[in-house]
View 1: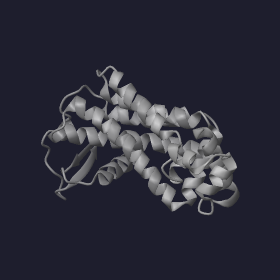
View 2: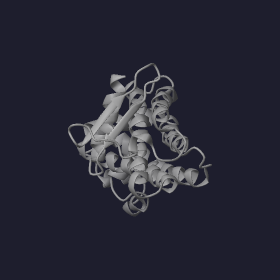
View 3: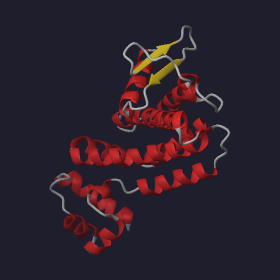
View 4: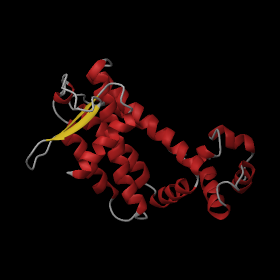
Length: 238
């Protein structure tokens, strides 16, 4: 029934637009009552993302059972569960991507979904690194980096119309994250009471040579979006 409702909704969204489609229109197209719709979806926005609850549950189950010897690798593998969900139905995924780009309310909803994935990854990492001080910071930054890397590769594929192998771009992006953070567990050199840069708030330095290492230093109060932005900028300059 979830699939029937989602298919009916997307047919109408493509024909009439998201804003001009009502729940009554969707249930009429699907041949069911309003009660059936709200049994599966709390709102019209939820029908655009019918598979994320299942995917989030699968990710949570995977992380609960995974070998914790490589926590960074584990959260990277967990992110690939989301990729496989998108890749399983390229046509639907591309349609959804285009629709969310057109409707501001859906972009906001999508950000809340992405944040739930990020919180799930960070929660797993806090269990490995600790929930206090640098352990919590490390967990939050790695989780944000994994999500940013995954979404970068995924959106390249979606913007292409679903052409080619989506795993190639995502694997490349996640390999960058593992290259920076995939070292043995323990205090990160980047977090061991470094001297703050001249600005007194945050900074990034890069080591010489082909195997470049990026070190990010940020005060505890720095917003997470700023941390991720600076990491992405540094990787892009490499």
